[in-house]
Image 1 (tube, rainbow, N blue to C red):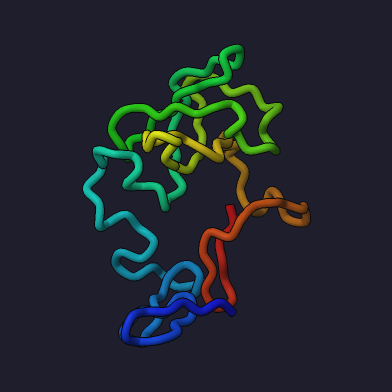
Image 2: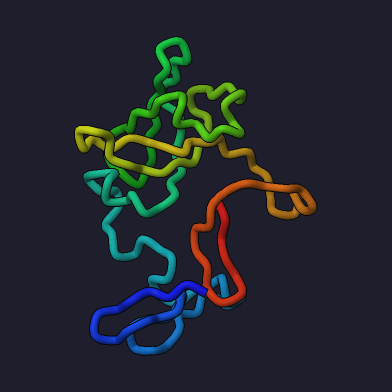
Length: 152
């Protein structure tokens, strides 16, 4: 199990907090504590989407131009719109034609000049976890503590 260093405390296992306790949350099968896994510390909408670069966001496609290779997304969580390149759509969804006003999920990163852009864009398909039981999936670990974790 991976440990992280906390200044003055030493190695801390995932899910631990600096005072030596553990946060309770959905990973533990319990209701989340105040501020656990939320954006409670931010005043929404934030001025810069880069303030949300550690979060998986949801929004809608406002413009999609497959011929030029670009699109735009917006979300209630930040002001303005973000550009995305078609090659930043997740590989599993490259063949899925996006449409204006279609719901999407995405991450935010800074491009080469520091401007926020949407990456890892995928359509919201409306599937529930039980709809895909027994199927094989690819993704990355978002959060992991003890025996539970979240995948994207």
